[in-house]
Length: 614
Image (cartoon, rainbow, N blue to C red; front, side, top):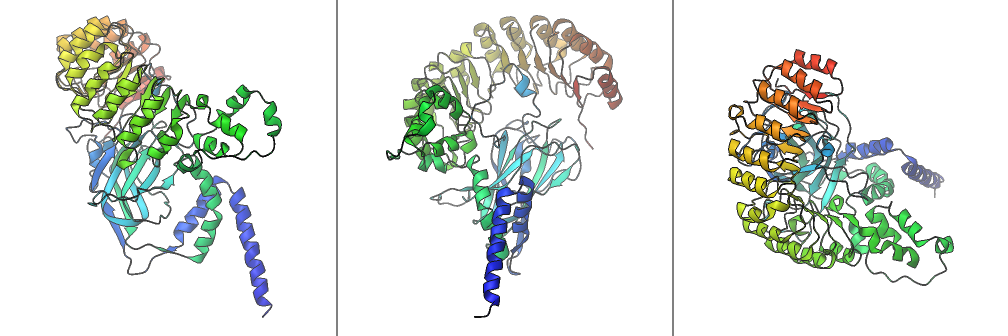
């Protein structure tokens, strides 16, 4: 044998060891560059032509600024070719999520965050898009027209929504992810993240967003998927680098969608006797419990497999008083709930938002879990949990007698009669029914125990009268986009709910300032801290003056779209309301950019928002 071959073997081994060492010590930025190298080295045959396609349909989303019976500012605008790109500005033909910034988290009604949430899960909203053809993705472009930078994670699904036969297994793979970052420019851009290769074709893409760092609403116009029909061939060099990155990928995955550990490592494994537990035996039980409180759920699963002592600690129900399963929506199923069941008998806060869709969680599996773990529940988050049906709400009403907070937002597949079971929840204080099909019948019984409404319903004057009569301690009321509430309903609310701190009457076109409804609100609700009168063109200087005189605790005010408010009245308001931090005067015809600059100079602590259309 030629001496050249042993030398090549030694050099290859040395190169391999160097790459392993680099993979273990590389910074996040270097690792991202490594992945970019993988992507750039993929090769396709000339016959495997690239397919470029816009989204065909929007199949699911968590929230949007628009209404259900309109196209303005709704997620449905993401389907098809761009409507306004490359223009920049605030356009009704784009997709806009419900919130931005941290303003909603600063309101009195804001819910406290769950403990033990993985630090790399920061998604607040999502939208799922389908495409005509299944492809192996090579690139994905998001056309952002206003305040870009909200997209933080992109995933692909193995299931074909247009296939007549449901798949035996549904997989989600992360194509790209990044922590929220501040984008200083508000102009339009074509966002082109470097996505990784996956080993299955897809025509279902999910965008997850975080708008907490944005100065205003982000607006998305279209999504373009590039891909090839046949699986790309990866070069030897690419494969070698990819192998060396497996260890780091696994580490990144464990706090993301890695719920396989719940299915495998949280099972009832029999541990051998082994030696004693060293110094752990000498630590107080409570101290070990306190230390374990800082672990994420998958890490707790792994630690349970090390020794009997730590297994006992990791399986203690006190570790699961707050259980946030939303970060693991992509893999959480009936098996996971079954393994967690015996450990969650004391759970008080449970977050199952976004989970269980596409058959991951069955009605039977959810019901079994709640029958064992529901007795102590105080807070239950089920936003966008489309597996829910009437049976599930019946089980909640029977198994959760202590429930005080229930979030069913965007559970739009629940039939109207299902909400009648909510009447049995006698301790309920907070109920979120945004984008549901709730009807008046069930609320006529339960509303006297609610602190938050956010729903779509027909006769709002009747609802307002009922709330005013039975909810004397109501603090928060969200009537965003209710189409038919009048000054009569407002009068009932103002007189019946004097403790109101938050009131959202945005996009309520039937309210007219000339009837005195806004003046009545200002005079009878002195505790108001948040008032949204978005898109009500009749709001005038008289209403602003009344707020300045009577609602001095005001912190957030949205009067977007009014034509009758002057800079002088706003100055008076800012002088009277010392705690005011957010003022939205977008599309207020009398408030031009010069007026905004002058007010900003006089009141630098107030964020005065004014959007534009190019």
